[in-house]
Image (tube, helix red, strand yellow):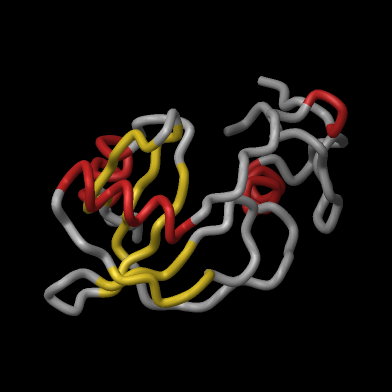
Length: 139
């Protein structure tokens, strides 16, 4: 398996206009979510929102319909956010997902490299501390 390099990366997603998206979600579903503010970092302009019952969630964009896969991962014990609402708004799939507790991770060596290095310690292609541009064949 190979990953695209920087020149072959997927096209960058357009940033969400959260107030407009929330108005469209209301028009489509009848659910009025309240915008609390932007999420720090990220690529698409994700925003914190609040449901009428007070629950807090995250509004973001999605390229695929990965909710069922996230459900399977969560069932297996992976801390994955539940998709609480999905809609296609003006040609963009938007997701309102469960807000999980936690904080932003600092940059680090990709976790797949650490797993590979532990399982193939003598491999010349993956040594501890080495950063890779693509995942190893062991995952």
